[in-house]
Image (tube, rainbow, N blue to C red; front, top):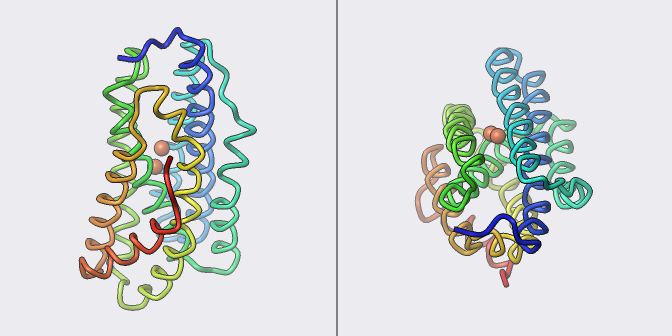
Length: 226
Ligand SMILES: [Fe+2]
Ligand SMILES: [Fe+2]
């Protein structure tokens, strides 16, 4: 277990925690936008958004418990391209794009990240992370269900947004590899889990395994992790 009292741990944790808190806050606002865009699921989407808001507060508490302030400025800068891409999809009425960005890509990232954080989390953060992990799986299921029900018509849009959103998402991770290692996580394990989860999701909504793999590998090729 990493020593959470060392300056190196606390320094890295401020950036990781910042990304988590900002990511959860953005997820909250994305679900609220989705609630407006999909009136028939409004109630459900507002409920999912509220869960994200709770995650943001709970993880803020994890930082506070360690006496660490989240680096929100860095996190906002890192998330800006992905958030902008979501807003662009929302503005242009590209619902599949919105659902892929928040519902598949961000949620698969969240599940992968929290899964690998769980075994190295401090005793305060551990039960919180375990609860959040279950919630994110529910969010993933919502987006999968929506996209699966319309796969024939949304497939081109899903493919197009994956090509744009995946490099942008992996770039966030790229900036955090040293910090992840400092808190006991292996960034390569995280990327492997993320790819597996996304592969499963893309197959669930209707892609052939080979097509899904190509889509993911195409994006991963643009990114190197140190
Ligand atoms: Fe969340
Ligand atoms: Fe989520």
